[in-house]
Length: 217
Image (cartoon, rainbow, N blue to C red; front, side, top):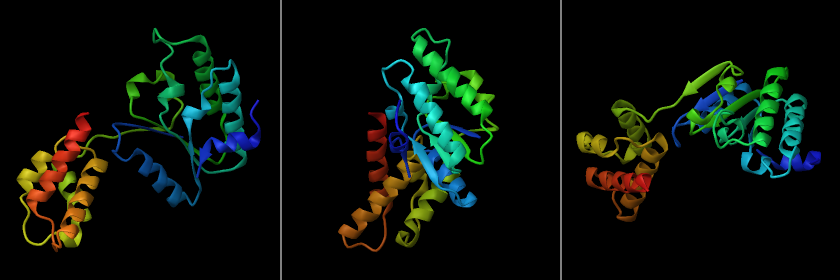
């Protein structure tokens, strides 16, 4: 069985989040922790799961003991790694036992902590998990209005005059908040390197196109 220190090493300093990468699931956990004035702990699920029978469930029990004893916001990222649908053909007995243990731990939790499960693949989650959470939030990629507001907020003083929003919004279609944000930051860097005081439509379209090409890979 893992020691308390080993269990804490799985964590780096009731809500379910699902949606594509970069749409704000982790940021939601950060905001909640900030507003609640509680520490945020992210469970590294890839280190939680082991090949040894019974060890994963034992680690889960120790994590929930920590959740009980040390109040905070606990984010289980990539939740589908341990919360996968028990009816799937490729499921194995050990992972079913892990999921059953997880369901039991969540249902019995009476701590002052907040437990958040985040996944990019909600369709893989066992339906019983959704009944264990008080709220389920679904995140989508931003629409045109949200993408423009996001770009305007990030570019801020680097907007000088009017930008060609029709071309910008067309090029940014389908990108997540994180991808749009990074494209804007890339455009600002290019403007600074070129000794420009503002970001042009052409440069922003270029960085958005690069992000879209990365997105498709």
